[in-house]
Image 1 (cartoon, rainbow, N blue to C red):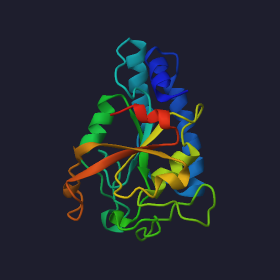
Image 2 (cartoon, one colour):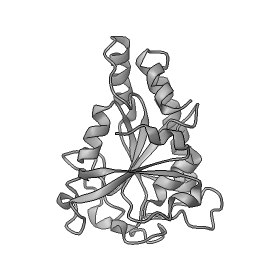
Image 3 (cartoon, helix red, strand yellow):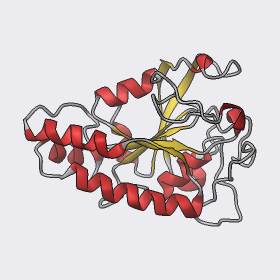
Image 4 (tube, helix red, strand yellow):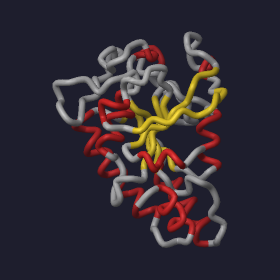
Length: 225
């Protein structure tokens, strides 16, 4: 089932988003415990309950309705620890969402959590993680790198962190190099510029960067935020 079909069924109430999300989170936690992809978790269940009510009352809207997405750790998600992979920002929970997150939420997405990366994005293999952070492991060979600096995003999508269809998750990530995606048989689609307000989180981060979503299935790239 591709995202477009999943969204259509979720809007009609044919999919129990709360049950689906529970299963997805359980599996994601199990995978992340072994491969170290997720650094912080969002309140997915409350969001799923909110969307399920919308579906039940016939008010479901959005291109990403019910779709579970992960977010690179240098992109701010309100109330979720966002450290850009650095101990310097440990405990920092933004009071705002980055613009791309607002756009995803407006389209009905569910935020799973934050994915591992090189510290402040300084690296291309996700081995330059900050103090106290474990390096994400390659899903095909744990002795190899996941690529980077969005290694957690690439690894999690390669293993398909969501349940049931294995095709209903996206990772929102910011990367400047293209070497990451081919290592995991991923499809990478570049979106337009978004103002992420990253400068408010870290002075070394640019206020505007290119956004990409990663997915293992090329047909998912047709869904644009």
